[in-house]
Length: 338
Image (cartoon, rainbow, N blue to C red; front, side, top):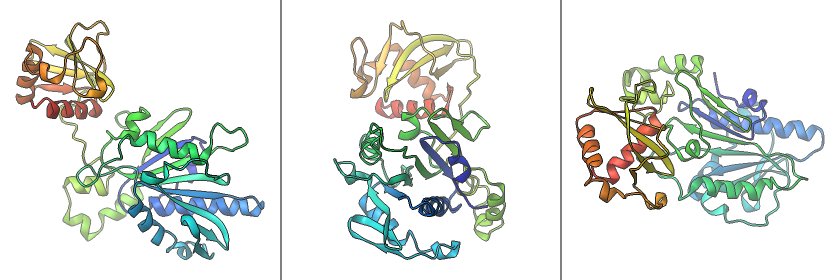
């Protein structure tokens, strides 16, 4: 009923994302897994240390304050004590190190040779209340490089567990690593990466039987907090199998390219990742996408293409091949003031 990364971690992927409903024990289950791994290595008299990452220092301090409180409930009757430098010891031996991504990514030359597992808690933010760090994924990779030293042949591999609630599939980590979930599937996996949308029927049934669940029944928050649906993702107008029609032009946003296609007879536009690489008309909407022979969002609004997109957008006649495409277009609509 409660989450544990144990089975998924046997697949031996380097980066592992777990997105689940609120209250399903992601943090506790991952902490317990880490302690179990510490015990396994302690039996062999080998060091095993764990790094806990939070985005900002205030979040790290709050996590550190309560992280070990429930350990006795799970049979871990050790002495957990705080030491210098945000280290915590188990029976006097350094075991857990807490990091704040916003500040610790600047660390260089530090020695963390015995850290063999990283847990990044709350990697996904609620965009209505918080925001990611600027260039966050690269900031994380810098911190990972400092801790894990992957280019050092004497170091063992250091897998990462990322934990998050289902806010939106369109987040910097899934974008950077090209993580997508096929319709009806809850697992993405390749040679180095593993991502899972946690589906636990026992937890869902127990959660649905509560008074709170009854009070929020049939709301988007219930689907998010109990059924693990992305609360910020609206799949209206998303149809990956729709006929594209005739190609018109290409748009660039956040380092990605999309083709805009038109169905003249149906009076609709379709925006998808398929495009004509020899397109004559190309538009950008951020400075980062600037390149030769493209028009900016300011020019876009004055063109036939811009007016067509605006009319179809205001007439609810634009379709998309994925939720990521739709959300990128929503950024375009905002930037171009459609």
